[in-house]
Length: 165
Image 1 (cartoon, one colour):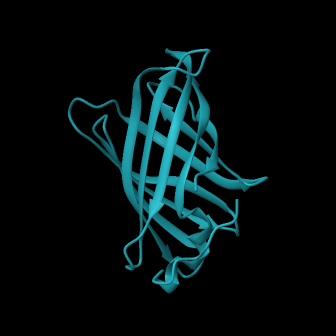
Image 2 (cartoon, one colour):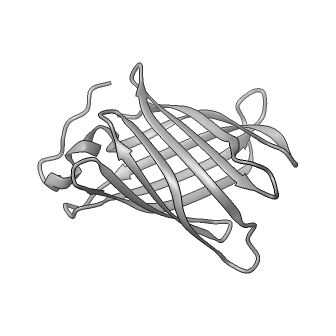
Image 3 (tube, one colour):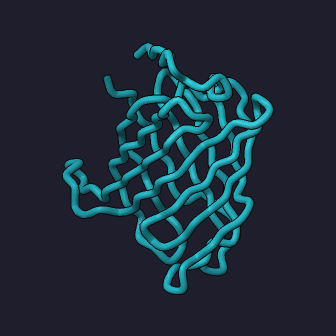
């Protein structure tokens, strides 16, 4: 599905223009110490004319018939471009974690590495992380690798999402 660059998009955000909109699809999550789950996901990138994108992601655990079992995770944040290719991202999760990410924009491919974290006293600490966002055959592919609970950095969640009209 084609997209249109909004008229009032801040010039700094042009490298991220392809992300703007709502994306929906399915993914999988697995990690040591947790059961493997399939999930539905909705991700929205929008803007208000300032030099950052607003980001909102929600996931729901789903069964084999793609019916929602229960909410899984949600995160909100802001994406800011620096020097046309460096990306700074801050995220807050419903689990009580807050994260800073740094990365590079290479056309329709974004790679991020976790820079700093803050966990509320009841949250589980995340030691490290990496994220990938890419446009693959018209779909938004996402992946999240994390280091937590004494395990090395490894795949945790990945999804493929379709742009919504």
